[in-house]
Length: 448
Image (cartoon, rainbow, N blue to C red; front, side, top):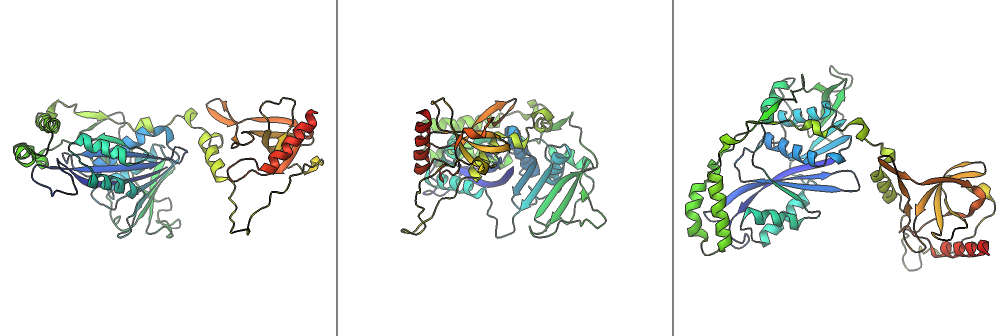
């Protein structure tokens, strides 16, 4: 699976962003986006985290957003995590984020984690399209309240993003600092970092470019890589919260200036929202918040019986079907056009081989035609993996439940029950007209 993580700054106030200059009485905030490519048929899963700069924007926030996102897609976690991060030292490219990656590997949540920072001047990440959609929306639409901002973000991107306000973040840095194997140095230049589990300990390798060789070299002093953690933190314990600060919000100033700056621009319901927001924020008593929160990393680790074999994965079968689709025929005028020659059945069954598409005759007429792929041939019998479809519809693998997974429906049948083989479907996985005509003639002939 692949995760891209980056942030932008927004300004939420009662005006149309592309026509009126920012005035006093508006509040800045941060939108942090996490785009996850699950590596399954579900595709990408977007998350958007926002705050109003009341919490420090450092590696604690980065780790918190990654933790929350991974927890929400824990049923789709694969064996390898590929992470794209902005090349920012304070938030991403530092010892705390690297130690967290090592923790994911050492706890066997992932077999490998690869982190990539794009070079200066070429920072076009997979997530940039998501930021572009949000920016275009904010330039053309009013964002009177944070609720307007959330709904706008959900509407402007497909698939719709899950928008999560960040109230507080745990203090991961203090806990990770205690278990690091040593001080980090020289990590500001390399752009690639790889974390692997070797002898139950996570080791890190690094390189400058994708074509460069991983360091430390295998024949050097550290052939396994650099040890990241001297021990695991106590995951049965709790994490303290990072205490928020309201100084950057300047809420008291905002409360005084809001009526003067926006009194004629805001609807009554918007004015009420801002009054409530300011009042509730000022009255928040952080001393009443529980002093700590438990670790949630253990929730990400799948039990052995929950890990399905890749060969039996329904998602993998669906992806294979997409990859194996026939390439369309390209033509210019009459050049390249394939004539639909009449398909002829062959009576010599010795030419039936593994991998061929075959059509089978049986007395039951409902469900015709019966088509499948030869999986194995043993003398006068063949094992066929059946397909579902119709005369004019698309054909795909016929999957049935087997325990907790779905597998292809197969049968062993006599080879002489076949009436047509070694034919192909169209680029849209449909029967060619010549093939369909030949099959209908064969069925009519055998039925008579």
